Amino acid sequence: MSRLDVYLRSIKQLGALGAVLTSGQAVTLRFPTGDRHATQITAHDQLVSLVREIAPPVVVEQIDRARPASFELEASGGRWSIQVVPRPGAWHVAIDPIEAPAAPPPGPPMRPTPWQRSHLMNSVPVCRQIIAMRRVSSVFLPIKSDCHNHR
Image: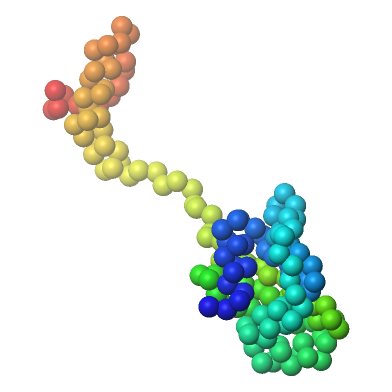
């Protein structure tokens, strides 16, 4: 288990949109209603160790040259985007979940075929309900069905 897993679990369990870790500052969880700051302070050396533990070698090289970098990571049952902005003595790391592609919208509802309609209308429960409605109503209900078989 990497040190990052603690933050990923918090994001998932609290329903946050992501987290921001900055050297020497409180962890920030981002929510639709606004950012919330945790009481936990992120030490610079811990943040550097966390990133070096999870980043691919190419990204570590880029960060060592003081260049911003980003990468994706599979962890804690999800896919995550990690952005790192290294500055001397202070790094800024953003953690964002990568959402699974949305399912295509459902198509229009299917209309029952004539066979399905006749089968439904001739089913015993539906026919009994129609017959009961005819008996209870003081007005004749002009419902055409073949329910006479199920009385």
